[in-house]
Picture 1 (cartoon, rainbow, N blue to C red):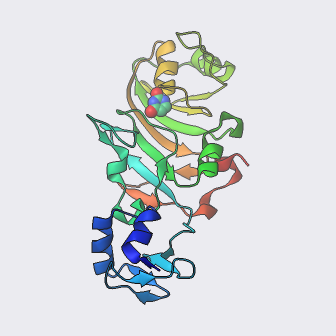
Picture 2: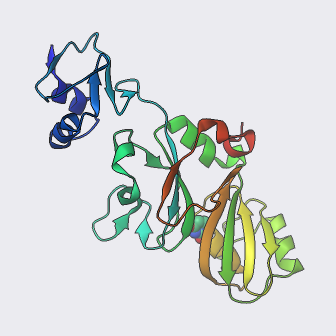
Length: 234
Ligand code: URA
């Protein structure tokens, strides 16, 4: 037999201090009964322990979509800057979602989080050919030669060659860019290499998942059935 708070902290659910509050708030059940104290003794080999109705141990897969604001770094920990982890509501924290890829500090838009490493890999791998769509505001105006250069594979200023990408001009100083890989500052560097430095960047879609009207700074849970072959590359 083991104390409930010890069992839950060892399962990585939350700190002992936070668990105390969660148990007091009635969020933890043991074999279907709400647990009232952290000292409750449970048989760790047979008890079915749930937090917010979700079984502990066999944690469910979670996929979250954040509308990232500018000013946050995509990192789990940073000595100076605010991190995207601060925008994850408490009710998801114990599921340990991690960012899928990254957006630059100044880039806004769609950022996914999951606790499923294989899913993250499928979404990120250039071999999966998952298209990421960006709305960019930039200097100058994109023309047909730029569209062709993107389709052929832009060679960045440091000589690195990008996979073929799509450039869809949207009028003076505005373009949509679609890429299926994630090099450092890729979209900014691609447009800069064509003489169109970016002044604003927002990711609006990843495969079939669209940012839609999710308010900035907000998170929504993505149902796994929303993932299509276009999104996972399968
Ligand atoms: N390309 C960029 O330049 N920045 C991002 O954050 C994502 C893609």
